[in-house]
Image 1 (tube, rainbow, N blue to C red):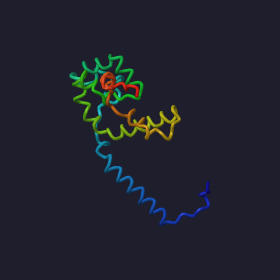
Image 2: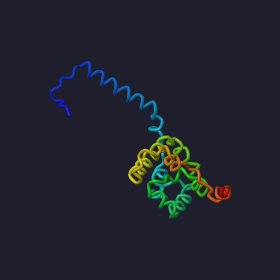
Image 3: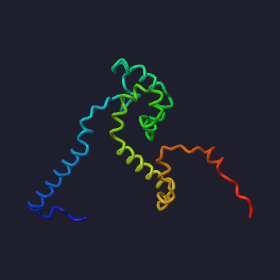
Image 4: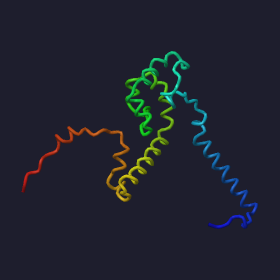
Length: 163
């Protein structure tokens, strides 16, 4: 590793680096500025820890029901499962979904990228199958939200007679 103590930096170089950093900052403001200004209710971020009595009256009952839902709590605490990205919340807690969906929809790309990186990391450490992750479709299958209908697939399978 080179020692940078003895390298003289030219003023032009420092100005160029500063300009580069300013451009990055401006680009980030353009890309995520509206997300930084969003007012995301705390109950969307941590629905199982929020004090329900401090929330608006119309949200109190559905929040209590959600906090009492042991399955949703377990999935949320697992950390691999975003409860707001499922039909369960929209179906079982429509009032909460109506309020939360606008916050959640703002982050689909970040969520999907994070989920993909997490899954790749898990696949590399568990399977040690570095070359075939994409070729075999493992990554695509692990990231899809489509549930296979095994019974329907089995019905369509035709047994092959001997030749």
